[in-house]
Image (cartoon, rainbow, N blue to C red):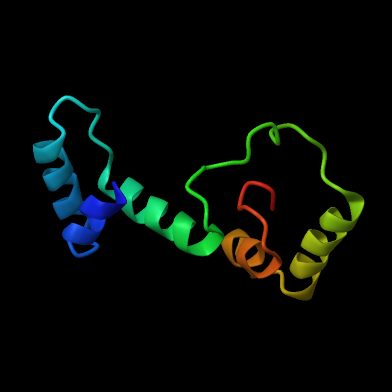
Length: 93
């Protein structure tokens, strides 16, 4: 998927068309999936959407306090920005 995205010069629509031509029997991902996968790999070094077994585990109190402090400092800050600054997933924030 990432090679197709690179071959399409990081254009999601072009990558989607090319992927469909190369793999006609596979499910066709949306154009956003290519960019999101590339971004996740660049930011985290991992392709997995979430860590296995992490779902539903309660947050550490210190982690919760760091997240809440970020919003206390700036109430207009986005969840995505806090996640990036603290090194957590958007879902965790």
